[in-house]
Length: 154
Ligand SMILES: [Mg+2]
Ligand SMILES: [Zn+2]
View 1 (cartoon, rainbow, N blue to C red):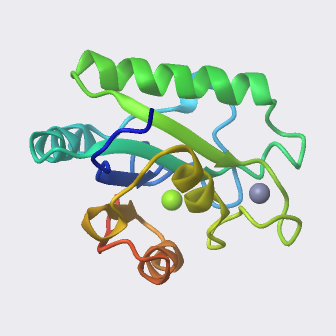
View 2: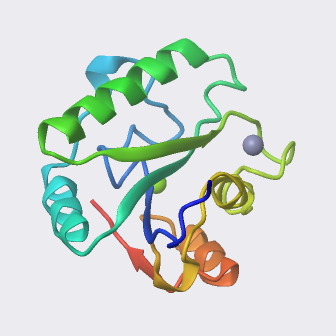
């Protein structure tokens, strides 16, 4: 049975928000390169108090380019969840685009990842927020109906 109340979600971009970004044109391909930004943990704790659930949406073209395997990406995301969990924050889900440019409808700033999340969960979009270091992501969120789209640069 679907929950009667819709959930409000904080959609989090990954690179540059949750973790420190790789250098330009580089990807996070190893666990040791995944360095969490301490501030986002504090911010998420505040959001948790306000009743938000957390969903990560991230482009990972390194997979299409053969620079990163799906299994390594899953390990990185398991580590990310673990680090959040240590701080009492549960990440509800992670949606990622593994595709190359112009080959899918889920590579941000296309809205496929948001649509996937909405198919799986009953989300209160106007009361949800999207946090990203990409202005294009924020425009996508706004167009999609997310109430609050917040720029977050490391
Ligand atoms: Mg980013
Ligand atoms: Zn895609």
